[in-house]
Image 1 (cartoon, one colour):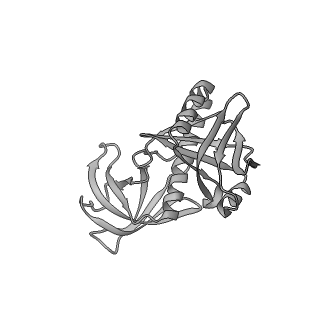
Image 2 (cartoon, one colour):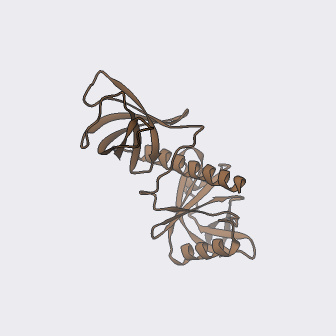
Image 3 (tube, rainbow, N blue to C red):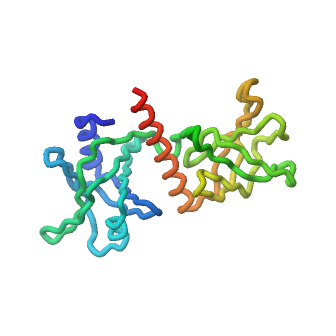
Length: 232
């Protein structure tokens, strides 16, 4: 959203709720804080900070900072420009330019994105019923808790309830996650597709993998929204 009235309302709700905010930079740099002040007239948002925190210093050295917070079932995300550390009255804070665009998503555990056509993730694993058979299945959609995979009709079917201990999920050319899967649902998509949809739960996802996956989900949705805006 780009309405200054709506952005101001949501930022003040985050402020009044003392909602935790995660400030993230490239390479997994992150810092957890809270909004301290929201001033649309001056064009400034302010976050609380602790002097001497090494994570804070690492964040200040990055060129891109993204802020993420939650209000009930809504995830709010916005880019931060001009992030600087300020001192006053014995306290430390982070100031940044007031965001001009704010993104709203459903709760991160349930929000699913469909990959962009230009870059479709692929899951690599062995067929649970035929161990010698390697599977390379494209991703139909994905969230932080689950993924839907496309199983072509010419491959042996996979049964619901099956657990796959090792799966390599290539999100893009630079990001590969090692995860486990539990197949919960198997359904034929439609006759034209000539294949089945495997609804899977993601398991054994470590912290680094979860952050990489969340970054992929965020960036994919941002690109999709940007594309839709250009088309309008």
